[in-house]
Image 1 (cartoon, rainbow, N blue to C red):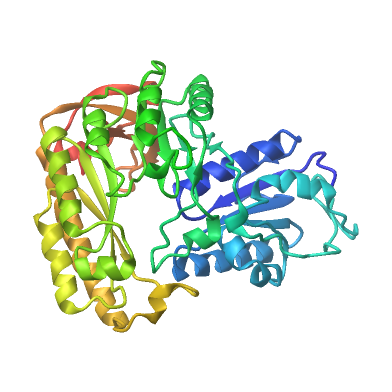
Image 2 (cartoon, rainbow, N blue to C red):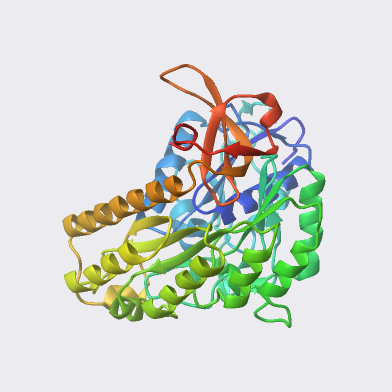
Length: 444
């Protein structure tokens, strides 16, 4: 494929890890001369980075692909990501999908496009690309043979960058397909991460978010540890802010909590998956901790880092989650001093051990449990915000919006402890960290 004058649009579904990977793919095409355009514009190439964490995510991916093919019939459509790895044959059989790349090859989009031989049958924007690829074989792979780590980071948003430091997972939780989509745990070296962080700073990015499938597993197969990495990053004076995207409770050591509490660069912000507050369900899930250990972690954070925002993932309606088990979860999260729940309904995933568990929760009951937990989350988030009304905290402003009621442009950002703040728009605030007096009006 001749890249001369071609334009590409990129669409990312799913986690922040996908965003960092899409950005790396985009830069590889930009280096070849391919211009980047918005997904709503006409493009010669569409790159869709997919998610497969739930059946809803997969359904959204299929719907999006059909929409792109319908509205952009002349575009060359490339699908990468977890769904592409797990369901490559299904995707390649979809009308209009030209190239499917799994976990091993997703960063080789530019290389594959260069090698593609298509019969030129019609003209599209900026060049001639044919209607059908001669050979449309999906490029999935044996993910458990993967050993190389592809470091990636997101650019484009001047304010923050998602930096991928780890990939894959060795945990094999009974409900999860991610190890089958991404392979075993592997990570960058500290030196690689430091070099990437310094490059991010050179682009005037103020905040770095460390991402991975199992972030705290960094360095598992080396002599380096996640805490070693945090300490090394903390020494880069040019970095204004760093956040840890998510970390398993069994890998969140007291030393890590204490380090974040004392650091000026690492923000008081923790995102910790609980998934269930019932020890019975945690065992069915094959999680590596108990509700007691999770409680200890929250108690420690509250003690040494009392202003910290604590986000918690939880799944409602897992197979085997009886009414009593759900009540255990409910009582636990009600009594924990946390800031917000990220609630997910349990999703049946083909090929997972969870499908063998008895005790299916009906859709209606699953929905009810989700709503109960989301109500608790709303209450906790409101209480967390109210705690800081009247205080002055530093906000990194990043984006603009327009009030539909007042038609007034505003700009928003986050405090160090992840409180969203919105104020009247001022160009001088963009990508700057400034002290703001928190009021109900600016945080609601």
